[in-house]
Amino acid sequence: MLDLLDKKIRQMHAALGSLSSDDVLSVKPTIEITDTYRFISIDFNAGSDPVQLANMATLLITNIASLKDHLKAWCKSKSIPFNGDNLINSNNSVALIHDLWNVDKHAELSSKPRSGKIPKLINLSKVLSLSTGTEAGSFTSYSMDPRTGQVTMSSSGGGSTKIQLTGSIVDQAGNVLADFHTTCSEAVTAWEKELAAAGVPLP
Image (cartoon, rainbow, N blue to C red; front, side):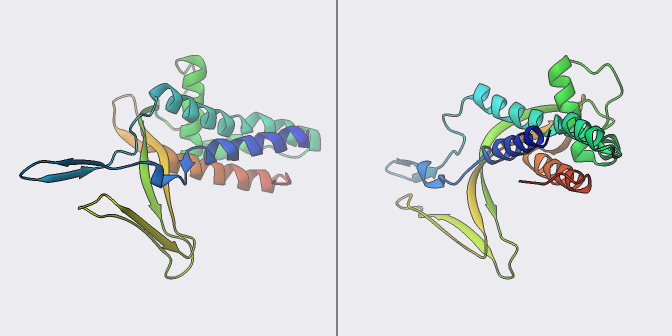
């Protein structure tokens, strides 16, 4: 039982990690020069396959949401209370991922959605993500010379610069509910706390 749950947790982290790449410098700027102007642009989503992006997102959603059943089986084997449903009902990020999973599996929801919305994932794309670390004074920077297109990056204190897959979670009316990557990260953290509370050793 533990081996199966451990594998599922590792798969979830691998799927979350696949949404980000450190290979920022592989994306080259486009430079256009005429007699009157110099135009430099960069598109971090250039060449992306929408189907591949959707598959990456679906894999992560599945790995997060399916933790419920694996944790339920663990709790049953240990004769301890299962609180996964309470987590889904009380945490909006966890609920949104659970509802996205159910919509993907069944095409439509046959029961009331846990988030109170019927969510849909749209506008999946790769973007530049800059994040500071947790240390005081941490920073990250990304700059491009407008004359040459030369990119310079620097960071300290745990700061990072990545290419990240994200998108928008919207309701049935098209209103934006949440950012996909942020929602997944929050859901992963919430499930890990629930797993730890149930006595599951985290890898």
